[in-house]
Length: 122
Image (cartoon, rainbow, N blue to C red; front, side, top):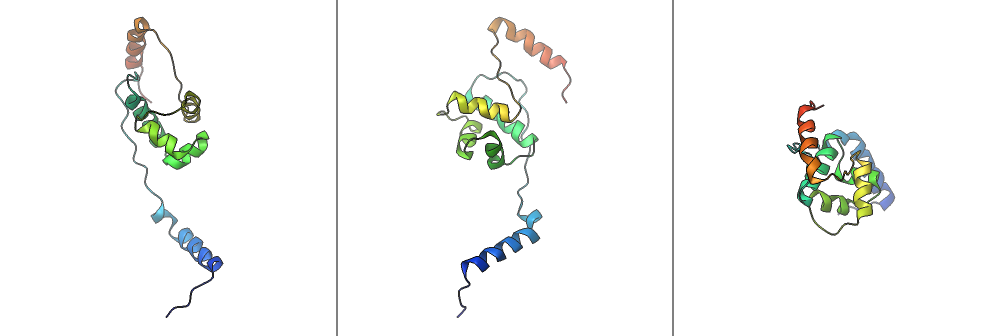
């Protein structure tokens, strides 16, 4: 029968294994495709924009949440278009990812979208 190792030693072993296999352990970030338009009509649209920006930046959801000062569950809810988030949290997430929220009249949205289509993507 194997003797149990003290917890402190076990933690050091885990740290050593993590350091030696870090590149294998790290998850690959798959960049989600951008939406064809910046227009947001549903929470799902907004969530897809946020997820695209996060993955394009190479951030895991927990790292992006920490960067934005919110829980990873809040970030997940937003990316999945679920309700139940305060406006304050939403604005913190958008700001943390370098996104802005614009309020545009319906009369002006066509012109704005047309200028977006004319501007080459980066």
